[in-house]
Structures are given as C-alpha cells and as structure tokens.
Image (cartoon, rainbow, N blue to C red; front, side, top):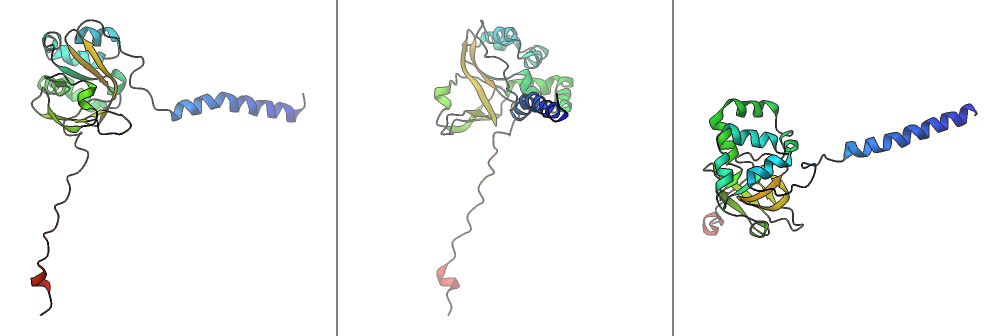
Length: 198
C-alpha cells in the first residue's frame, strides 16, 4: 500500500472512531438511565429502581420512611442519582452532615396533595411543600414541558401504592423556581398640568 493510501486510511479510521465520541460529548446526559417502573409504595419504587440511592439515603437518614409509605395523597418530585451529580458536592456534604437541613431538603420535594400532570399542564404557580415553604409548579410551556422549582419533570404520573411520583432532572432548591425577577414598578404617571409650560 502506498504511503498516501495508508495515510488516508488512517485518517478515515480516526475520523470514523472519533465521530461517536464527538456526538456523545455534545449530547446532555439523561437524568434517568431507564424508565422508572412502579413497584409497590413510593419508597419501594424509589429503592427498587436503583436510580434514587442518594435521595433514599436522605429519606432514611431523616426518619421520613413512614411518610413515604403511609400517606397515599402525597406527591414526590424525586431527583435521580444522575440529577444529584449536578449539585455541588460540598452542598450535598453539608446536607449529609446536618440532619435537620437534610430533612427540610427532602420535605421540599414533597407536596401533601396529589398533583398529576393534568393539574400542572397549562398553569404556573406556587404550592406548599412538605417543608413549609413553597415550590413553583410550571406547566405553562406550550411544548408540554413541565417544571418544578426550575427542574424539568422527565417522567410523570407514576402512581404508586402510597402516592404519586414524578422524576426530576435536578434536586429542588427552595427559591430556585422563582427564576423570573419581579417586574419593576411602573413610574407614577406624570401630572400633565404640573409639567405643562406656563
């Protein structure tokens, strides 16, 4: 084989082998590796999925397991382990070290009422969370994307034996759903008589 052909063959092989790597580098990583399948209660579903280990560890560490098992009217917005990867490790370490803060964080992902996608689509507004603060539900996107506190709901309406589960692409942080700054107050109307030349 001539040196020119050998060079061209090497370039072609390099280009072909690099193409999948370039495509995978550009595509965002999915927050859920596989669809979540309902398996019993909320907590059973989260544990058996194998994709919510960080969230479940927080539930267990804060003695909230009974809440996830015995309140059939709750809605939980659960971030996957991949979703937690977007959270700064120092923030997660602080939560793990402070049981009260971790409990409030977990309860912020919970609403004490059933909120399926039919109640989210087409509306935008705050609802009380289990932590005593509010989360912002946002179904106002015309394309159908539903959000909660700035996180996207990537799998909705998983009806378990003990409540409703929505899978989200990042942990919910109190106050992050209010991404839109409040509108500046309008200036008072000018009094035409006061500003008219005399």
